[in-house]
Length: 306
Image 1 (cartoon, helix red, strand yellow):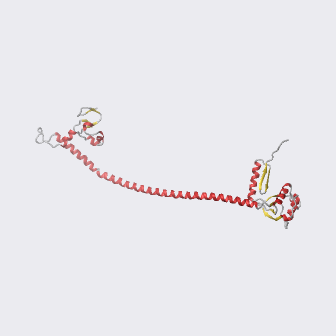
Image 2 (spheres, one colour; image 1 turned 120 degrees about the vertical axis):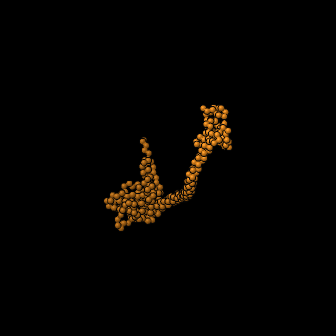
Image 3 (tube, one colour; image 1 turned 45 degrees about the horizontal axis):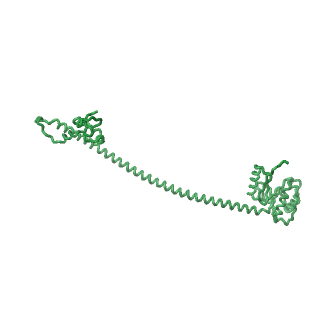
């Protein structure tokens, strides 16, 4: 705890004069607390009160008590203070070149920083251009995808129409499998024999054309019969299906017990669909599946106990 030399009040924080060593609070010292702190450590230790400042800068006067050949104690103290301040100023001056170099270094670093920022800005613009280009590309791809989706849908519809028309063109056809192939065969005679065996005879004039066609994944060839009258074809197929034990020997092939099958002439896609339908029907316990007019029919048999 200190006592102010000017107002005699006690205080904790203040300034001490470098010359007279007296304590002053900031109000009486003529300086703010912040201003005193900003002086720095060296200048705070050399701070002088208002009275000592007046003595330092007042003109020297000879004292009546001074000896003719000497100076007073006050003048000597003032000169010491001035010399010390001059030395401090010299020290500050010697640091100026270092400060200049530091400023130059900071300037160079700022230039490099500016160049780096300009480069980063250029790179960022390049990235933005690339992103914009990619976005345009993605937009074009999305348009192409939409166009492809529409085209695929149209192609699927067109394929369905073609498949339907192709199957429609086969509605008068019968496919016969299991008839062995032999040289110089007469397919019309074989067709007539089939009609007699199944119990549905028809005239040769009811046949538009008859021929053999290759079958998938086998060396055998099926017989395709195209009837002029579709209803004759349907009745012939129904009669052949009713004959469960039709074999090659029944139509003039000796003892050949190879099974003979008479069915509607289906397109490859309809044959695949028929296979899937049979699998599904088996899983769902449907008892009968057949083809009529190119369409798949099925029924679920329900057994009742009487």
